Length: 266
Length: 267
Image (tube, rainbow over all chains, first blue to last red; front, side, top):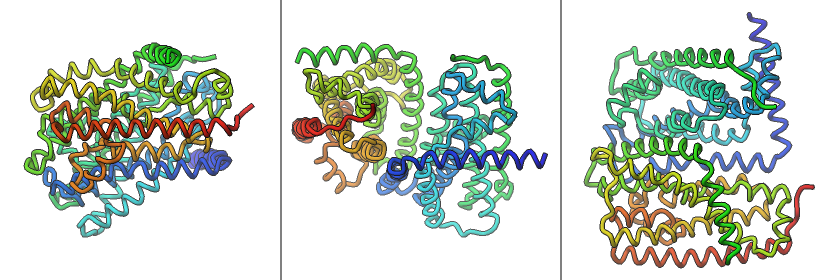
């Protein structure tokens, strides 16, 4: 078991180095795109900034509090994207039939799909997310103590799991539709864009859906209440970890898809 | 002129073929429209007096924006134009007795119009029948509606003229990625795609209104909802005409310069 994990990590590292080396063949393009990505995500931040120049609070959340919320969600998403966006190109793999190659190799197929392509230009986005996170954390008026630091770390872990699960579902659905479903963007990119505000502003129904169906609220709203001392019940610290369960149905759907995979392409 | 009209027609009918993509896009745009309105409603509930437009005008603005996304989204560019430049196929186009600038202009206008035609009606029809808070209101008056249509066309042309500059710049830089991303996100923000221009602070608004970005979606969408009329509207229409003339003149001059010393890539 341990040996298998070690091998997997080694293989993953190898994939990573291959991808970095290939991206570095086009250095200028790489840096420009990374820079572009870095600047782009500031749009959302500026949107928040200008809205709060006009309004002092929304649903009881002030600018600094929303900023903390936004920056945590952004980092959750960017980490998941960095790691799991290989699934983004998965529709292409299914359509052209190159997933067949993956299946005949004696290695875990998820690992291979993940390794098939790292979009290195996303480095710009993750850098931006880190900068925003630092800004959000340092500007919010939270006094950090160990339970709160743990809460943030759990939020990042849980959020990363939720978004990775969504990417996995996106890829798994391709087995049945043979093409990427644009609607899934609402659940991934949409969650990043609209997750900038605490889920509660979208109303009670949305809160229910995001608690029980797709657990965004578990990694955003509830732990945020704890961080901002709006609710001091200690179990909220661990709520984000519950969201990791979301990976189970996603993985099950993926397994189901692989078993039903019929090769296409030529 | 006739040949450019045929370019337009060809690209237009081609665009109409992608119906499944349009359906998928529509579902996405509905979701975005709802979420966007919910955000603004939350702000409205918090401080109605700080709201620069009425809530119903804001809802109309958002639905119109979603319905006509394809007309104004600068990030929706013609990838095949970039491809012809990067791959060198541009050589064939250069041999033809057409002006590259005009050809691309009519083609990208056609793509945008065909996409918008496929998507806008279902979105608009549903948006009109939504419950009170989310409903798209009727135009402020028939007169406003007339001006809405005129400025919609002008706004589209300004948007296309602006994205033409990015295509032409590709002649000089070859890899358009970085420039393109920075440009399009900047345009999106200053055009009022992220938050409508009235939500900006007053001093920002005064400057932004002079820039070409304000002549894109900002004008038609705000005229429709009645958040802009009278002298302000007349000024906005003049600005649209001025920017259209400036952008087209500059763009076609730049493209002539580029064609003179174009390097054909690929082989």
